Amino acid sequence: MKCLWTIGVPAWALASLLYPSLCHAADPSAKDALSDAISPVQKDVDYARAKADEIADCRVQSAKEDGWAGWYVLNPAGDKLRRFADTNNDKQIDLWCYYLGHRSLPRYRFRF
Image 1: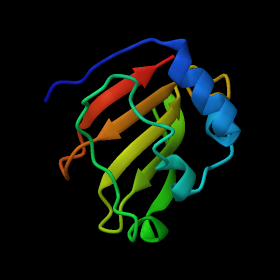
Image 2 (image 1 turned 180 degrees about the vertical axis):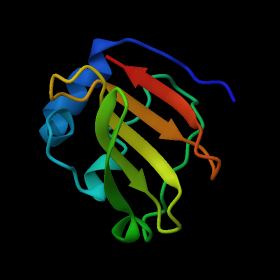
Image 3 (image 1 turned 45 degrees about the vertical axis):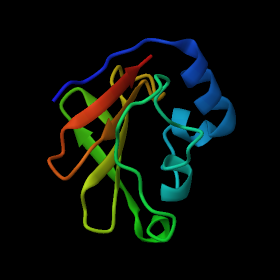
Image 4 (image 1 turned 30 degrees about the horizontal axis):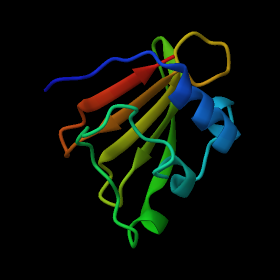
């Protein structure tokens, strides 16, 4: 599966202005994390989106693994939809991942 890497200030700036909780340690709500305002900067990227009637049943799960801390956004079935992570321990989100399907492989990654 192809993953796209990109570095671009506009998406990071937009996310930090619209959803400051995504750029700091506090867990966001699933609704905020799944907002269309926080989406890949490239057009035509295919990634999983929760249906409007499923968003209330989606959940945010905190995670800490080797080299990063952050959270996953999971759909009602427990499949990964998004991952937001701090990879350099500065308490700010610098990696956004968008998943496609149930295989838990990121389809798109944005690193700032």
